[in-house]
Amino acid sequence: MLREADVAMYRAKGKGGRRMELFDESLRQEASSMEQLESRLRDALPRQELRLAYQPILPLAGGNAIGAEALLRWVPLGGDRGAGDELLPATFLPPAEDSELIVQIGNWVLHTAVQQAEAWRRGGIAIPVSVNVSARELTELDLAERIREELSYARLPGHALCIEVSEEAVVRDPERARSALKDVKRLGVSIALDRFGSGHSSLGLPRDMPLDVVKLDRSLTATFDRDKERRAMFAATIALTKEAGLTAVAVGIETNRQLALARELDCRVGQGFLLHGPAAPDSVRLRDSSGAVTSAPWRPLVRLRGSGTRR
Image (cartoon, rainbow, N blue to C red; front, top):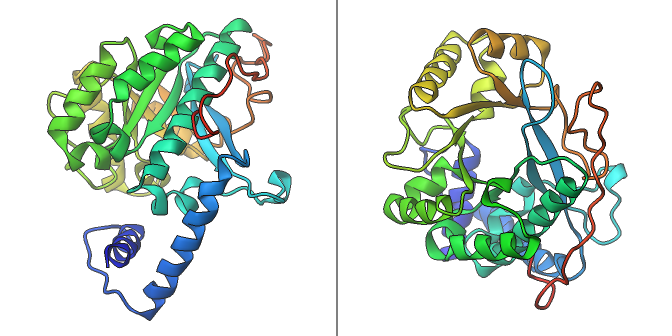
């Protein structure tokens, strides 16, 4: 019954949220597919089928990257990334979100991303790497201790890492989220609120959260060049973040018109396919052509701990 409720919830979210979905035969089939997917995903870590791609976070005026977000990808055994067999998180993470599996995947992502940040620093590129954290990791586990351990192994300072949390994760349990993020902040790690403006708030920042960055949801960026209401929301968010002393990042910039409008509305940092798409660590470009510094390929610094489910 819990699985059935989860499937109905995920379908409602996929249709924009704030609605009800009844569990019917089509959802029963979907539930069965989700169970099979979760079973396959459990084997993905020991089979080394998970990958991280990195997407630079860039100043909209041009220049070197000021950060890079680690993005999870799954290439099932026998698949070919180049042939389009790479799966995105939205297609495979929902079944894992309320189980221990999301913790195992999160551990692997954090470990791999921290190691990559260290590799880039050895190559002369000292930028923070951003890692997304699920609601379960944020409110039910000692997130700060996990981060401290990884930074210690890689001998990195806290500012080498940025933790991204979604509005949804924060509103799930605001008090515990606030406490966990304050502990992370004490390590010198930056905190980014992801998907801001996606519908979980009325464009008000969560109170007393130790934020550094606000990432505007791509739903705002996607239509603000032709939707006056979205444009007003975008402008209001930029003003809100500036007043709070935070950095605003426009996510999902895919056209020159969107880029020009973001600049016009005084947004100074962005992320999107027009600027640079997600790429493997040895092919992502973190310096502009005038800097001409290429990233160092990833190689592990320490042996992965445990049965292959550690990061």
